[in-house]
Amino acid sequence: MVTAGLSLCMIVKNESEFIEQAVLSAKPFVQEIVVVDTGSTDQTPVLAENLGAKVFKKEWNDNFSEMRNYSIEMATQRFILVMDADEMIIEGNTEALQRLCEKIEGNPGSAGTITILNETMSGDTSSTTIVRIFPRDERYRYTGKIHEQLTFLGKPIQLAVDSQIKVNHLGYSALQMTKKNKYERNLALLLSELSEHPDPSYIQFQIGRTFYVMKDYVQAEHFLNKCIETELQSSRRNFLSSALLTMGYCCIPLQKFNALSEYYKLAIDLYPDYTDLYFMYGVGLIESRNIHAFKEIPDVFKKCTEMGEASSIKYETVKGVGSFKAHYNLALFYELTGQLKKAVHHYQLSSRDGYTQAKERLRRLLH
Image 1 (tube, rainbow, N blue to C red):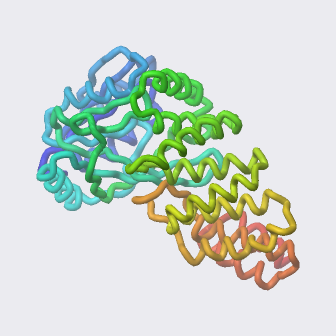
Image 2: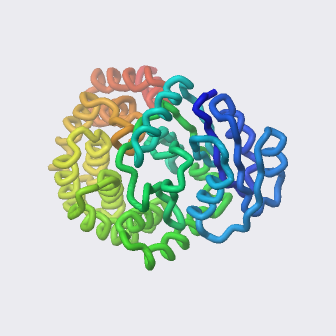
């Protein structure tokens, strides 16, 4: 347990499926558990209370930031750890967390990050870092109706320090999103936020990404393009790498392969160590069915394996783009072009990381 004093703050509604594992995973690190229930009709508040949480009721008002800030106001410890009920800590170090709290307390405007592992719609695992640990100080407040951002005196956090905490997030799997109609809810809140937001590029990015996962690629392209244009003129560029990656993937179903190539060139010039960009381009080359582009495919995926996985501290990244997924795509290329020894080699490399699809194709190839 962190001796500096840490409050876990959560806002919940109908999360009886997840609340226990979330709270239990955080208990070794925190002195206090604050749960703000926004209208559950299941056993969520009872389960939380049974685990020692202080449960407060507050009516939902379509504003995540207000709910977050209320949960912080109910806390009493020196530091705050924010989690969602559908998240679970899978890795953490008490001593590292203690050092983090001491560091951010001595640097006003700084905060701690955790690494979030998400199951994507396609079944992949993406990882990204997000600010979740900060002093209980009225200068730290959340802003934004949805995809809320932590601010210090109304401005973005200037120094983000890795806490070495990793969290599994289950709520954005295809099943959970479908069950809770989160896409429609998120989109409605984002569009409402857009009209009143003084800095709309982040909201445009989130709208574009929401349309992308809903497979409305025309609308996704529209909002992502607006976001990218604005961010290219900005000095911050906090999420430009993710916006460019999503735009690249958006171009593939729209069959805008020339545009994809231009976005790719722009993106790797800005972010040459972002493996996901190269992987995305390789996927685009495959889907283009262009004989002239076909010869580029192995070089692109070889580049991915040479680079390895992208840093989840710097980028939003999908597990395997610098390893087993890239080897798998190389193996497919070599199998389709009759280079079976090379195909077997790369299927084997992919299989070593436990990639089921590679194991199945390797078995078929060898028998």
